[in-house]
Every structure is written in structure tokens, then in C-alpha cells.
Length: 116
Image (tube, rainbow, N blue to C red):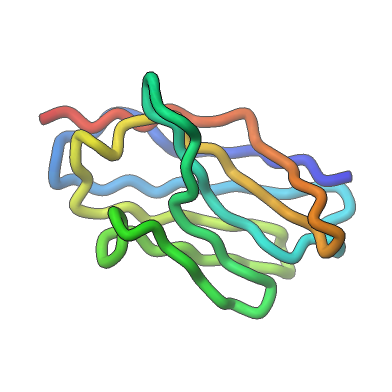
């Protein structure tokens, strides 16, 4: 099993930057994909960015050019550098991991609030 613990997040003004980090523990050797999802109030959880063990990345159109995902597979960590933040980026951000057998794991979530 995989456990995920997030850090980072907080309150920032529009145009500012934040960095989210996530550390995986447990059977980390089984992880293929890691990434970040977010959920805004009253909306469904959506994928923000993902990265495979091989380094292939995928971003939501709304964050392309502003967010950068990175991963240290040896350490079992994934980070999300968020720049040029907008009020619509506000939400709870969840770390995500998926094993080779497609078993998902989620972190507890961290709040990101962007004020206008």
C-alpha cells in the first residue's frame, strides 16, 4: 500500500506563487503515476498535472505554462510549482499516486486560496 502526505499550500495573492510537495511511503516501488488533483467548492475533483515514472507529464489546459510538476522517484516525492496564480486556482489540492496495477492512493488534501 501507498501512503501520501502533502505539504505546502496556503493563502496567496493573485499573481503569486506557491509550491506543493508530496511524500509517498509504503510500497513506493509499485507507483507508476503521481500527480495533483484539485477540488473547488461546489465542483468536481479535476486533474491538474500528472507525471509518470518515465517522466511523461500531462497538464490541465487551465494551468499550462503556469504550473510545473516534478518528481524524484528515488525519494518518492512529487512537487507542483504554481506561478501566476489566479483566484480560480483556489481549492483543495490532493496528491495522487497510481500503481502499475491502476490502484489509486490519495493524500489528505491541502488548501490553496488565491485572493484577488
